[in-house]
Image (tube, rainbow, N blue to C red; front, side):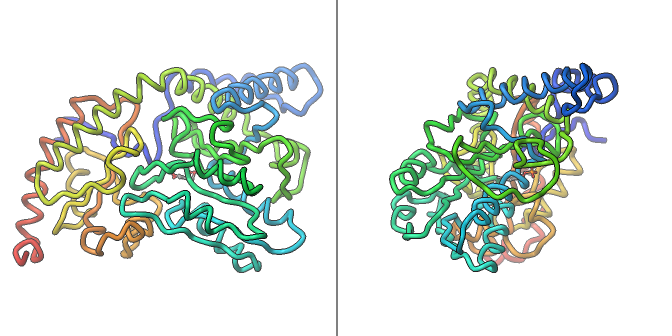
Length: 387
Ligand SMILES: Cc1ncc(COP(=O)(O)O)c(C=O)c1O
């Protein structure tokens, strides 16, 4: 029997905090009015939705009119990129990075099929983009630069402030997929000069299937869906009211605790990195300092990350190999390939992502279980014996 359960997959998703859940509950079965209804019952719900919009805006330095609720990070990214592309009279040029989430990368590939040109910028061995390379990539018809605030697999933070300043200087729109950063680190749309920013509630202890797109006042897109006039027609359809209420509350709570949580989680992260590195032949992937507070991505050399994961799973420790979205494929993830990891090292990668609820005891439990697991798997590994 496992002695404890340790969830270290907060990069994939997080639990809804009890106070957020309690706050959402009435909006399922008591306050179920449609916010577009003109009667008092509808108006009451409208008021709550607008409160949530204010909280969301306040968390990122935006105005409430600049927040559009969506079905999550994927949809926000799609609306920003496809929406700006569709607004154009003729195809143009897009700049992004080679390590974006598929919700940006695959949209960019679609845009290429539609006649747009896309520059996928390379990253250094830590997964950082060089702002100078962004500047050099700008062409006459570049209409948008989309660079994530932090990478979901290796946790590397991007110099989005510098990139936002370049975009502004050249009059190019700037979108950032900030799904991994909002609620974890302070972020202000004004400081980074963002025109668009994507966020998702389930990454900061809010519900799944709800997110928001920040769209700066004056920015224009051609919406992807047609329907009612909800969310300024940017995202029509009856609102996911409990989700919106939960997003607003979760973000308010997350931001109020950000500095306390950041230092606590960073301490746990560094303790885990140190303990795992001491096992030997363990490589830290991502930037040593410029990384998400809760991200620990390491490669256990000579063994498969999947095997490590399954062994941890049997001990009640839940992590992921690379990113949850790309696991199940035999190809190393596009991110680990982009930072130059060879196949074998990339395959030995495991991501632990710490968050709300993790404790020192959890880290110690992982560090207690890791050595025998790694030793056993290496003892069966031909590459370990042949090294
Ligand atoms: C960086 C990044 N972008 C976008 C997404 C997609 O967000 P959602 O699950 O809300 O669609 C994720 C989720 O894993 C992510 O980590």
